[in-house]
Image 1 (cartoon, rainbow, N blue to C red):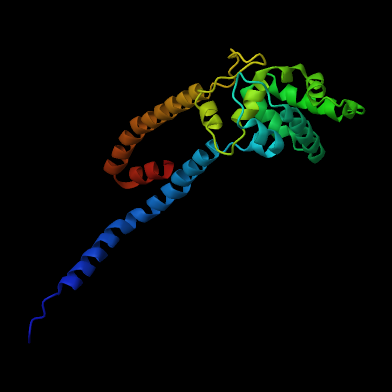
Image 2: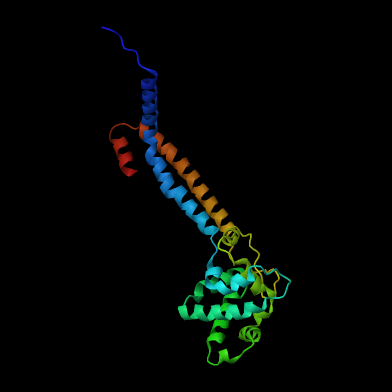
Length: 231
């Protein structure tokens, strides 16, 4: 009988099949890492650069203030725009997200937003024709650049505010525009403490688990079964 030699294509197919079989035992681990490590990290990074709270809450204001630079006069149309945005936002009941976002970057910013909305929504508040005077009467913080600077910083949809905040790189301002000593949560310190605790627990597990595993392997008879049952 003639001897049939394998072709190059069949050799490649067999090689590919062997490689797949070699990888197969690791597939559950790869799927686990992708589902519980890569995907959550990707989602965290996506949300860390998504910063659209201010632009969604104050669409008129952010459109006008986007090109404003610190040190220059506030655009006249911005006062009317922010009042109209606040009135609409209050009627929709979505003031909480905006006040929290402003408060994260400005000391007292949450109170500025809430008190301004209350004053603008009060009976008789719409009688004032001067938009600037009406807004500044609602809260004196609108006379300062700081609150306008926060709105300008959040006028886009993508930014590094939350990333800086989570890594303690954000410089929180007070109402006067100066860097505040109150910088909020020390997230980086919390991360370090958590990492050290995790490392310590892992090392302790290795120190206790390795000798126990060795004893279990060497144990014979009922003692081996008892040790395995205890684990």
